Length: 206
View 1: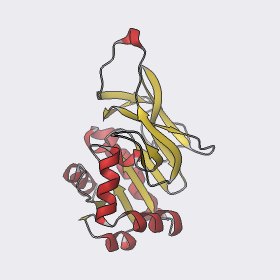
View 2 (view 1 turned 180 degrees about the horizontal axis):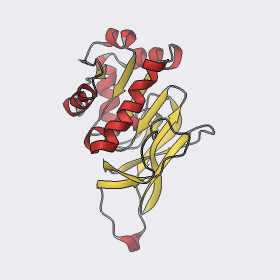
View 3 (view 1 turned 60 degrees about the vertical axis):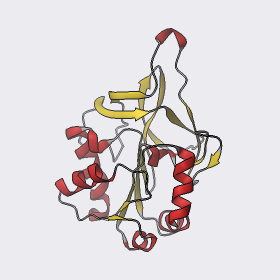
């Protein structure tokens, strides 16, 4: 299922998953999350507003049960990735879902590089060899980004992929059943489709 909490790029993700021939539906019903094999949490906009919207939609406790207790696979995309953190600073401090020990902060690039925010466009991503998301994808391939904030973590066992935009930042990460990308795989052409396929195939082979 793809979660509809009022702040996601839903139909691009839906069309990409359909193109890959996986059964998928968009839902705004929390009970559907508990029935799902895998969960996708997309997101565009403010961290704080997203958490308010998730709370109003009744998704927060169900997501915690599904991911932390039932160990369902979840993929967070862009803002969805950031919401897995303990906290975020966008539009003022707010708590996140708390799946990963980390904080979301605004990107601060070196003054001499004169880089604009948001970071928009295709940029290369460096995946580790053992990455599930990066399987069958040539390393340093391009993915599409749109963001002004990045994810800083304190986890010891987090498998990260990195990208550079003035600073090196976390472009994707994996821990147990939790997967996330700062970039938009649904807008990243062949590489993005392969990444989505890699994630969706986890429950097929389980």
